[in-house]
Image 1: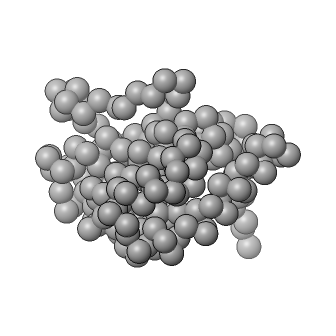
Image 2: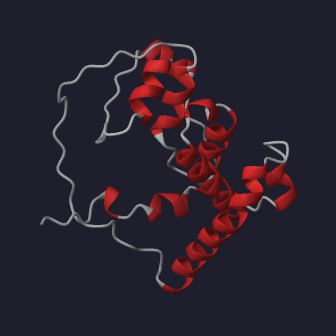
Length: 171
């Protein structure tokens, strides 16, 4: 399990990671299904699997990808807007099941996103505080999570939700 988390969150190891998981194991860890939603981060199940099984890694390219300006990954906000319960669950599990492996920065980011998506799915403040048994980090990150939720509402109402990903700048 440590190898999965070390590679996943190790500094300076970036880029897409491809996974090939045995079908018998994948069937034991199905993706959660939410009515009206079509997307859950694949790493939600990979993290669950990593608690029971070891991952093997190779350092070789397995797939060459060409990102298109109008492709599925061109707007990161769209899947989050359309699938808030899946993203809420992802951050909740990071905070409850995977917390020991997260850096302080990742922990803060997960808490902000947990609060943000809690508001999107209609979870009130008292219910939000409950999963961590009133975690002080929740209280500290509440303004940031609430602010991100307000930004989302603004984008939905006035900008129609689209915002292209940042483009790489070459110097």
